Length: 452
Image (tube, rainbow, N blue to C red):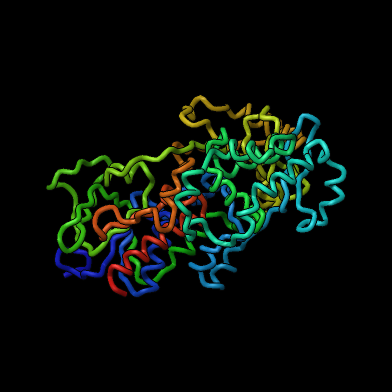
């Protein structure tokens, strides 16, 4: 009898969802010798982390970045695989738009070659010594850590005392110019939080990751991370296979695959039997399958433009400290990775929509293009639009007191008994590191249940 069918191999595990969390789970299971089948509803693995070619130009699904600090990536990949990713780094600095002009904010120790440019920029108008001292005090507890947030035991008292990041910064006295033109824009860009509602604990961790590592993209697109993670012998990948029902029984779990939108009638779809299931889909799909509570999310729009002329002098991320443009974050991707658009200059940007806002009511292409020109201090009129992307409910928000979704001992991984484990961004920090950690944790839960 084939593996996975009723009465088949009792150690065959189903993974529902072929995004980063599902791929991390598959790698972890195979390392322990466990057979697994990955069911992916679409025709590609990777979830939101994927790349495509448009007229010879590489475009990712949204402006995404890789952080060189992320330990989960290094744990899952072999050293040769990691080096083969072709990581291309941005400078450890940001360019921010202030009321007085463009300012550079950088770490002069990590980027000494940027010191002359720092001195020429409007940095004095952007930096407040009191803010910087207060910011260090705000970060104090985080600076001593070197681990993924998912690996920590967060005390219940700390979670009970957690507040919005905007309130936490106010309490620590971080409320001068540095806050307005640098810190708040960075939090909007990397927490995907338009109004500072996120958990202060999570915000400190995210700022810590930016201080520990360099932002980067992959030479041939972020989709290469998916390709590398998926290279695992012995994994059965089933594309175009949407799971419509999961039901635990006495000795395993029944997984039914059917057409998108298909109901859950007992007679519909193809049902297979597995010892355990790891559900690694987005929050809305998890709710449909298992009745899990939905989590708050942010919607993001992205635009990609190509220019014949260079846009930036350095590979930098740009943010808007004035909030006069619709741009949350932007960069010339080709300044770090020319292979994205050979012979051209590729600019990408994000706009994070306020929570509850309809992305259709967001900025239009002309507004975005003009905003990018202001943000980079260039004339963008000759740029050509490559693509516009909208990702609705794309990023889970980590709000105060919601860290039980992440906490090592407080966050329950199993939904029903011990045979269904959960993974995905809604059970982790919404970062590549966090999503991979969620897949590892779910797989390790199953491995423990199997007694391996």
